[in-house]
Image (cartoon, rainbow, N blue to C red):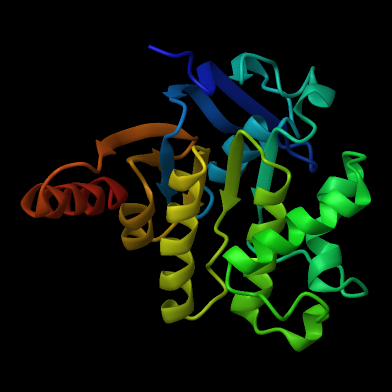
Length: 248
């Protein structure tokens, strides 16, 4: 078996409350692994610690206890190693309004000091794959919400990352647009052999996207795990179990 892309071992994250009223445990004794090529959907109520888990994987914060490994490295202590290895799609598109769609996609490649001509060709190719051919020179204000998020996805894929992290990337879109983008995202992850962690608070979205689903309770721990490779009846049973776990 190949080594996991992500490994959490008894991870705990404690934040000190700013008002001095003790500590807040956001993640507690969290252990799991994510295999190469897998899409894991992380599901839970608001405030259950999903975003803290996300930030631990991205190396933005350090665990209080336990160990986090991503691609065999410590994402917090070896942050420089991960340049170009992790692509992130945020809840908002995070596009720079003074840059065209093409220039926004090129940004990550610029940061990695890639050849400018090759970078433009790569960025243009990803915009075309995401249905935005002809919009390369449009600025964000001229694009719809769904189109802007497509630019954001193109930007994440353009650097050829090994791992994609998605923090409720379609929550601000209407359901029809979100459904199309979910399908497109999953197709691109599979076609390009990527691994992805997809955070959401919608059961339907988790079941559409994930090969596996982690249902989290607060402080972040996996209260239920399901693999989404069963038949329709099995999927219905999983949905009922998820609803039961979330209601606790």
